[in-house]
Amino acid sequence: MRVEVVCHANICRSPVAAALLEKATGVPVHSSGLEATPGQPADVRMVELLGRELPSLQTHRSRRFAAAGQENPDLILVMERSHRLRLIDLVPQLAGRTMLFGHWLDGTNEIADPFGLGDDEYAVTVARLRKAATAWGERLSRIW
Image (cartoon, rainbow, N blue to C red; front, side, top):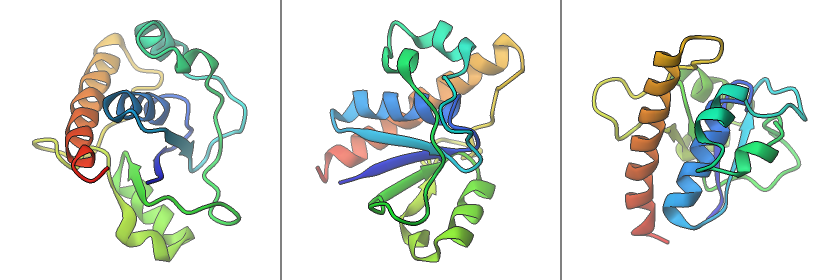
């Protein structure tokens, strides 16, 4: 199964989510951004917060979601509803395979971007990403 986690720039939420989900499942998980500038490093604050736990963040380089010319993922997990709508506009046949990373979270299923905000926002985002990765890991482990 090929899983891809998608956010806006692929420097903050999606690389962390992919690394957490990979850690939870033991299966490679890819990440990309709908508006990513290819080759950018992960957000410095995320690396500071999670670099020891998730060493892949230290070498992460952003990549843009490629709608054509790639093997389509079996499951695409996005951070916000707007990401899902945009992705489906790009590749309509992926509609049934695209869900929110926070789908299993209580309350809002979207995971807000903390980029450029304060420590509290980063902490909330990391906690939500952890909880969502655990929930997806439990469900995906049943089918892998």
